[in-house]
Structure formats: C-alpha cells, structure tokens
Image (cartoon, rainbow, N blue to C red; front, side):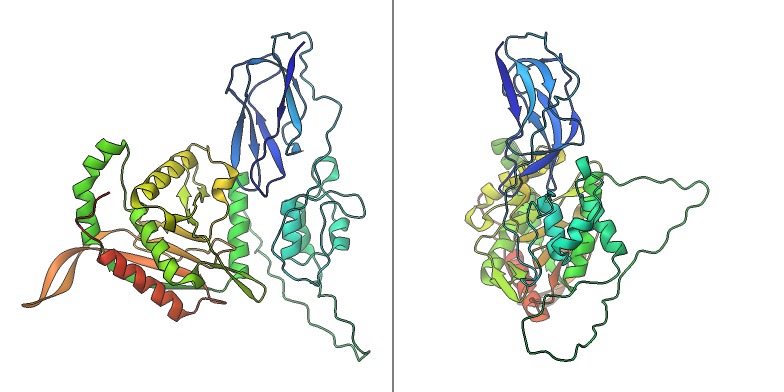
Length: 435
C-alpha cells in the first residue's frame, strides 16, 4: 500500500514547533488535494495545513493539544484509498521534539543561559526560554517549575504563575573581586493584580489563545519601555481630494480599492529614512538601528482580536506596490491565512484609530520596536489659511497623528521632529499624482 506522510511544515525562521489545535479530518475520510487537514498554532499565528496529495486519511500521529516539532510526521494518507489500516488512535510511537537553538536578544549576559534542553533533561520551547531570559530566571529555577503541559512540559502559563509567586528577584552573578562586607540588596517590589470578585449575573469568559498572547505582550511592553506620546494635527485635504478623484478608476483598473493607509505607510517610511533612530530596537545599553524599514499594520480581526502583519522594505516600494501589499495582508489576516513570517520582522508599526471614528489615542509600543504611529479619524473642520490677501477661514480635512515612543532612546525632540516631517509630507501631497 502506497502511503504519504503529512509533515509539520516549516512555519518561519524562528519557529521550531507548533501546537495541534484541531483536526479537521478524521481517519477514514477521503482527502482531496489542498483540503485543510488540521489547524495549528504557534506563538506567532494560527494557520491550517492543507494536504499536498489526495487519498484516504488512515492514521493520526498526534492528538489535539500536542506540541510537535517542525519536520515531524503528524498524519498518514493512503494514496491508493486502502482503508484497511485506518486508525482513530494516535500511533504509539512518539516523535521527540527537535532541539534547535534560535537566536534571541541578550537581556543580561551574567544570567545563566537557558538551553533548549537542560542538564535535567527537560525540554523548553523557544517562548519559555525567551520569557526566562527577559525575567532573569536561572536554569535552576526553571528546572524547579512543575510543568502542566504534555508529559510534564513547562508552558508559558507555568512560567507566568511561577513569576507571580516568586519570593525574590534573582540578582546577576557578580564579577570576581576582593572579599568585602556584603551589602544586602532590597528586593524589587512585585506588582500583583488586584483580587477580583464576581457578583450574581456576571459572566466569566475565558480568554482565547490569541487574546492571552496580546494581553501578555501589552503588559510586557509597558513594563519594558517608558512610554511617551506626542500629537500633531495634519491638514490632509489634498490627499482626500486626490483619493476621491482616482478611487473609481483605480478600482476599475486594479480590481481593488485604494485607501488612505498606503499613503500613510509611504510617508512613514520616508520619515524613518530621515530619522533612523525611530526605526530601532534596544538591547540593554545598545541601540540597534535597523537597516530595513518593515512596517507592521495593526489589523482588527472579526473575533475582536488583533494581529499585526508586516510589509517588508516599504521604502523600496512605490505607492501601487504598497497598496497591493496593504490590501493583500489585511484580507488574509481577517481570513486567518497569514504565514508566520508575515507577522515577524517589523521595525515600526502603524495603527488606525480612525477606522472606528476615534480622534486619536495613545498606542502601546510593539516590542522590540521603539515607536508606534496612531492615525486618527479625518474630520471636516474650520481652519485658518494664510493667503496673499490675508488670513481666511476655510473648511479643511484635519487628522491627528499620535506617536508613542520609548523614552529610553527617543526623546521628545526626536519624536516631535518625526511627526513634523510626517505633517510636511502629507500636507504637501501632490493632488495631481499618478498611481
């Protein structure tokens, strides 16, 4: 009998494993080529694995909830349709996860490095290792955590629970020096969430996996970066008039809409070229100025969650190319069709509060970036214009830009200069521009 093994695919440069969240087919089902077989999840994105062949599904090698290494077989398909060996149970043979190191930014070189597999023989996922690095959890402490995952594996929730109950914060291993009287260090204060009580009629809704990731990421960002937000208003009348003029012909020619978003992306990228310190990351006391300008686009999903697909090398694309990238990523994000690589590598982020008629807001930085730009609603407002015949009041289209930045490396002057550059480019937009 000819068979074909379905392999857990490579899901991105830094992704070495994924969790099987739901089998979409059962043993005995007839499979067509490109049929979705299983839903999987990484710490980056959820996606489906399609079948590259047609036949009959005869064996599942893992259960829902299992964590599987990239390159591992997860199911078997009979190519000649023989169902004599169809099984509903997972095969007894277990595949060991691939212990592959990935590069992670250093947090404190004096803290003991957490390997994929510790001296105790325990395996730790890249996400768990990353949290351990950020929170200065030593290998000894990590080995002491009781895992609640498959076969006792330590999960992210286990680590977060450990941090909440941790009695003292570890200190860095000191450099060798002459003996001297020990000076006791005060333990860093722990921040604990208030106890929440429920009342009759309250409904308790457990966060789904994506909302948990968002919640943890937002708390981490506020903990890591001192946030400051600067605002500026922009007269975008030229842009509004230009879009009204070209939108019908553009849709007829290209088969898709043109929105204001690509124009904001183009201007943001040009401003980042002028102010590279805003297109950066922080590693300890080192500032990493990014060569590439990869802008993330915060996208609201139908279920209320948020995802940030990334347009790579925005500065190298023309307005038409940016428009097609924006439309494609937004469409596939809402259909849960993004690949892990498409939400990684961002160096700057734009979020559009205006799509929900909000005037402005104070967004949270998408770590490890140092800034995020919020675009507010475009409104008609009376404005004072300078003319050759004196000042006049006219109705103009006004929008507020808000830039939240990491005050460790971006000061108010730099943030203000970046916003001023954005204002100049948007207000001087060519109303006769071809696209």
